[in-house]
Each structure stands twice: as C-alpha cells, then as structure tokens.
Image (cartoon, rainbow, N blue to C red; front, side, top):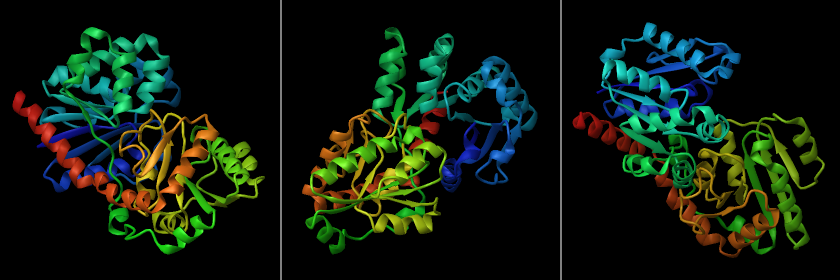
Length: 375
C-alpha cells in the first residue's frame, strides 16, 4: 500500500516522523510531502521518503487559495500522485484542501485529521472558509480527531445539522503516540521518596514545554501560591525554551520557581523522576504529548478541560481536567491527587500503553484498507 502524506507541520516536530517510521514497519510505503515557507525553520532533517519544498511565502497565508495553488503545483512537480493508493492529510484546510483537489483529479481516496489550528484559526476566524472545511470533511474517506471534545466541538459548532451524522459515522478518535524511549524507560513504581515528601506536605510540581502565553504558566503559578497558603511547601520546576520574556521574568520573581532550560528526552526524564505532579492547563492544545511522557514516569497530570488531552484517560484516575482560567480549581485538583497519590501514580504508569505508536499505526492501516476496499 502506497500512501501520500501531505503535512505542513512535518518539519516542525519529530512526532510525525516517528509515526511514519512505525507505518513503514507495518508495510505501508509512505511518501511525505512537507510544504513550507522556510526550510531553515525545520526541527528535523527530512528522511529519503520526505519531499520538503519551500513553495510559498510567509505572507501567502493571508490569501488562502493563492497559497494552495502554489502548494499543489509544487507537489505535482515533486511526486507522481497517480502512483499512490491513498492520501493522508494532516490538517483540514492547508493539507486537506490540497488532498481533496488531488483526490478529485486522480480518483484517489483521502483521509484527513482535524487539528487545533483548524478549529481555532480557520473554522473560528475565517468564516468565509467554513463551507470549504465542511466540504473537505464530507468528501474524505475518514476523519480523524485527536480527542472526543474536539470532535463534539467541530460537529456542534461548525458543521450544519444535515451533515453531522454523515461526518460522525466516518470519524475516529485516534490520539498520538509517544517516543518508544518513554515506554522503554517507564517508571516501575511510585517510590517511597515521593510518598514521604507528600506525607510531609512537600510538593514538587513540574511543567515541560515552551514558555509562552498559550501554556498559561501564570495561572499555574497562582495555583502554586494558593497551595502555599494552604500549608504546602511547593517547588514549581519549569523546563523549556523561553518564547515570551515577560512571562519568564514574572515566573522567576517567585521563589517557588526553578527554571531548567530545554532538555533532550534523555535528560528530561531525570526532571520528571524528581517531581510529583505534572501541571499544564494550556489553551488550544491539540493533544499534548508531554502529559503522556510525564505519566510514563508515574506523574499524575493536570490538563485543560475540553482540550486535546481531555478524554484520553478516565477522569480522576491518573489526573484531572480543569478550567484553565481557574487557579483555585487547579489547586483543588492537585490536592485531590495528593490525597490518593499512590493509586493515581500507578494508574498513570498503567495508562501509558494507550500511547504506543505500533497500536496507533495499526488502526491507521486498518482504516486505509477499509477505505480502499470500499472503493
């Protein structure tokens, strides 16, 4: 089976590269077309089966169809579209529209994923493109959502009633996997050091990721202050790249904050292992791999209600969802974790099997085959 992957975000993260490697292991012959405005911005080096093209200008994003024409022209010049069995688009608008037009011309089915940018930028703000987005979802052989809250949001808010059942019946909830490294180095047990700290009302919170407004670190810091007022001795470890200096400066003013620069996974795991709870009540989170990575080290997690990670694990078993704006609720939910820490820590370790790429890619292959058999 030959699959053409159209992915405008491929070069910005190792996530999709890992997925492609696991698909290859399951017999899928993949070619990735990665359109970009700057190859210098790439976070990874393309593999031999990746065609990365600088095919549009940064400002072209303001003229959707003009940019789309450039992407499609570059794609058709780079690969023989007719040689593929299926097209996998990784966003609805930028990738999915291209997949839809190619599908119509070459008679090749396509599948499409819905991501945060589709929901919060295109569907929400670009009202003139909503009809096109719905058409892309309707014409797709399958529609992938990373979480149930996102599926419900899109169907309820952006899809006309007469099309909801049509799209729902061919939609799938398929989350992301985490790097095999985390499965190979999973925490075996909670450890007495953590339990003794918590019994003494000492608490080590951790966040890992970019330091910017979307990650909502100031609200977490307010929750830390509330916990201190309740008698806890709290350390808040912040690990990551600084993208907003104002937020970073405000964090450093609090004596509870310990800053650690961005770490490779081989070092990040050490930061998780000397922490107790992972906290990230972020805004507009498509999924959030760091939650699952932290869980692999026995850390219960605090995540945003209604965003990408909500629904990936049963509520209250290995963590809690929160209102991202409510620092008091965040503090309350952290206390609930502490009251049942040993059980929730062990549950976090057990649920990590849900985030294995082998299992996730097997689901994709089954859906590809189902669509091809229908054709």
